[in-house]
Image (cartoon, rainbow, N blue to C red; front, top):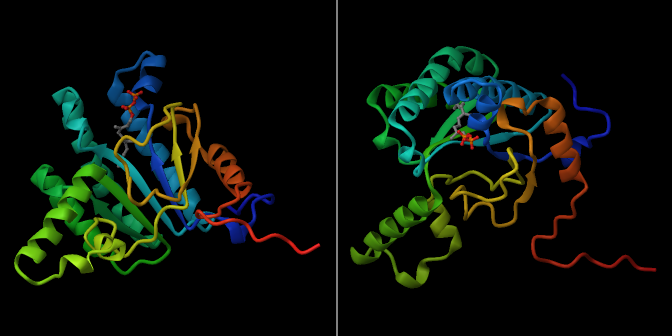
Length: 247
Ligand code: FPP
C-alpha cells in the first residue's frame, strides 16, 4: 500500500522504535486471558512491519521482552517464549522473501535453547536482505547493555590494549548491541504509559517520542499514519538553534 498523500516521503523516519504495550489490558477488556493479547499483538506486529516496509521506513526495532519481564507469572513467560519461536518459524520464509533483515538485541544466552536456534537461523538466513532492518529486543535492558559495554571496555584497559583517555562516545557505541545501526528517529509507545522502561536509553538521546492511548493489539496503519504525521510536524534541532532566515 502506498504512502498516504499527506505524508512527505523525504521526511519519513529512517528508523522507528516501538514499545508495544497494552496486550494484557486489551485482552482483559475483551474478557480474554492475557496471553490472547500477546497472540493478537504478534499479528499487529506483522502488519506494522509490512506497513513500515511499504512506506519506506528502513529500520524497525521493537521491544518484545525486557530483562524485567522474567518477573511475570511463569506461564506467561513460557507462552511468550513459545510465541517468539513460533513467530520466527512461521513468518521467516515470508519475511525473507520480502527482503526483511532480522536482528536481535539483548542477552540472548538466557533464552530457551530452541528459541536461540531459531534466532541464529533467522539472523543468518536474512543477513543480506536490504528492504527493511527488523530488530527484536528480547531479554533486553539498556542498563544491562551499557554495563556490559563498560565491562568490555574496562577489560581492554586492564589488559593494556586500550588507553582510558581513548574512551569516547563513538567507542562506547561499538560495544552496544546496536553497533552499526543509526539511532531511532521516532519512538512510539502504545497504551497510554509515558516512560522508557529501560529501552534504548543511550540510543534515544535525540529521538522524537509519540505516545498513544491505543493498546498495541489495536495499533494499525491508521494509528501509524497519525504517529508519522505528528513526527513530520516536529522541528528536530539536535540541541542546536535554528538558523534565522534573513529578512
Ligand atoms: C506488553 O504488554 C507486551 C509485552 C511485554 C510482550 C510483547 C510481545 C508482543 C507484542 C507479542 C508479539 C511479539 C513477537 C516478537 C512475536 P503488557 O503485557 O505489558 O500489557 P499490559 O501492560 O496491558 O499488561
